[in-house]
Image (cartoon, rainbow, N blue to C red; front, side, top):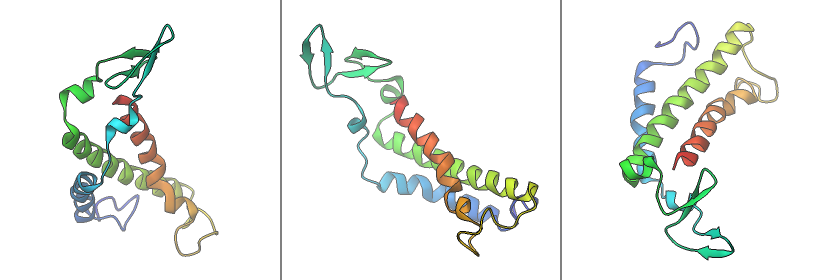
Length: 137
């Protein structure tokens, strides 16, 4: 086990597998990050279109630093690694809380599954990372 004191079921091959398959899955997922940019801005009542976005409340024709330095495939790859790692950290954090509380499950709603929090621990942390990643675009 990789982190026996926190989560005895976690293994190094499992963690490596998650970190390898996460970016591959992200590369295969059909997401267009341009969808998250606002396509038009208002300047004194005049509306500009395509190629503009609002960055920090200012309408701009420029893309963010992240978009300028890396392309869409690199963004997807980076997002896949980040979400894989934060998913693992979220799971380990929830397991650590259960160990500290000396509880086998985080609740009784889903018996035998570690509780309802065990079903969403990875998503809770990864969701925050995904949100700020999209904001950085």
